[in-house]
Length: 206
Image 1: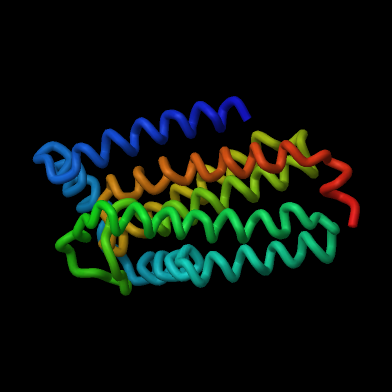
Image 2: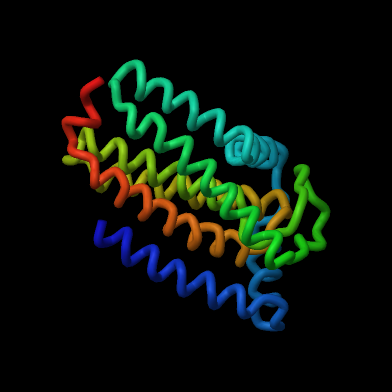
C-alpha cells in the first residue's frame, strides 16, 4: 500500500499542476507534439484501438467488471472483490464526469477516428484502464502474492496501452491521459485501503 499511497499523492499533485497549466502555450505544445507522434496509423492498429476503446468505455468497462465480478462471486466466493471491482469502475466514471464538466476542456482539433463526446480533461478511458488494471492486480496479488511484481507490471502495461489508444484515435490530449491516470491512482489506493480492512478469510468464505 505504501507504493500506491506515494503514487496517489504524486498523482494528486500532478493533476493539480496539469489542471492549472491548461491552455498554456507550453502544455499545448507538449500535447500537440506527443499527440502527433501517436495519432493515426495502419488499419489494424486503428481497429485494435477501437476495440480497447469499447472495453475502456463506461458501458464496456462496467460490463467487463461485472463479468469478472460474477466469476469472483460464484467461482471463488470472493464477494467483497466481486462487488468492489464494478463499484470501483463506477465510482471512477462518476468522478471523471464531475471533473470533466467542471473543467470543460475541449477535445483535440484532430479528426476523430472513433466516436467521442463531452469534455476532454481528464480522460475517462485512461481512468478506467488504470483502475481496472490495478484493481485486478490487487485481487490477483491476494491469491498469488508471490507474483505481485508480475501482476503490477502487467497492470501498468495494460493501462499505458489503454491511454495510448486514445492518442492514436485522436480523441484526447496527452495531458488528458496523464490526468486520468493521476486521478485513477487515488481510486486504486481507496480500493486497496478498503479491502485491506477486510480479513483475508472473510474474502474467501461464502
